[in-house]
Image (cartoon, rainbow, N blue to C red; front, side, top):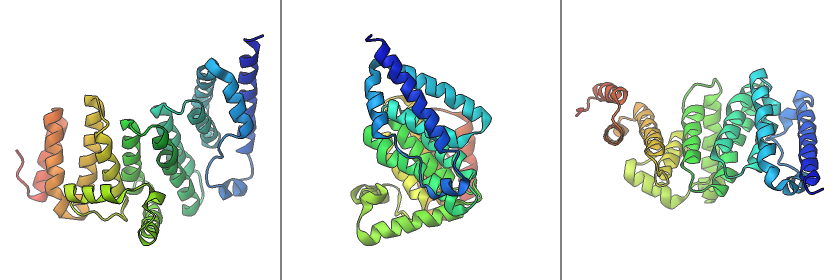
Length: 285
């Protein structure tokens, strides 16, 4: 009987997942009105509480289903499953990164207007800012994921709505500055001043400043050479992109690349340093 109860909970959970998939099949105009995938209900919380040691089994089932949906390009349903995965495995960084990436990259591009796209890009950012880091404040992978999203999705023109996203983020920063509510964008004024002092005064309305912010503070949690190399790369890439807009960042970008090369020798990075130095008229060592 004791084994029957958790098994029943798994069945009920999968039924709830089926209901979530149905929810995502609503007319597109209704789905577009939503800003993000809803959190699991109280009933779902009770079901998950009853799973006990079967939570891992349920997560594996959902991962299997998510892989199928990914292959089929059914990103709306995938977003719902991703929210369940974060619910079942809240301290697994890969799941948070996967879920936020799916919202910001896959679901967003299926939307018809820049405003609709931004809702999903923002949902991906907020998933990490509001929940991922709150539950995993010292996981370097989440800092790297946040930095990447600000750098690539908002800071670069890889998405044809990137300029719109930058405008929306600028508005959020301007509102935070005027109200003094920096917590609304999860930035700490003291840490912002530290970034300005360390790397040069930032334009905090631009997403590259946030990319640098999260990469820099993630470095303090990087306990392995691999994690440190990832975050160091995020730092110097953010500065390189800033240098393309304002050459005053070029010397510090070069210094960060040279530090990264010393920490982890890489012939490709050595070539990048040479090219960057020549482009900006800087001596390369």
